[in-house]
Image (cartoon, rainbow, N blue to C red; front, side):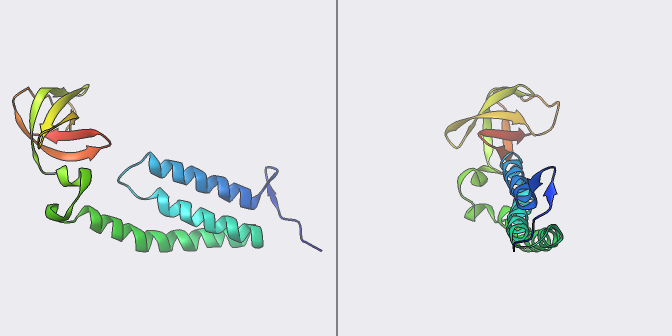
Length: 151
């Protein structure tokens, strides 16, 4: 006879872990550059599988073990990728460190810059800074389709 699984607020433990995995995944999507919630999502999937097969205690242990392993292994790989030399970067990451020309004033509410022949929306990298049209600036970071620039 199959043993009844413990319920958390009327929901099976594996379902709680599956919901947590989805929440961590969504959180990772909305926090670019940190790469912290992704490993936790992987760990929550592992915990959901263990909870479906065993008990909630085993699932918690699986979550802890897999999250520590993922953070220990995957996070250094991601950080190494961010520190790659500019020459080997591609896409938006290749724009970091490039010079840009301010086309429309760049302040806290936005602005426009020209980077390598392309026009980008921009914001100042440092809060409260305003960059006038015609100034040469440097791309400090790319956030989605917006360049964060500084003098």
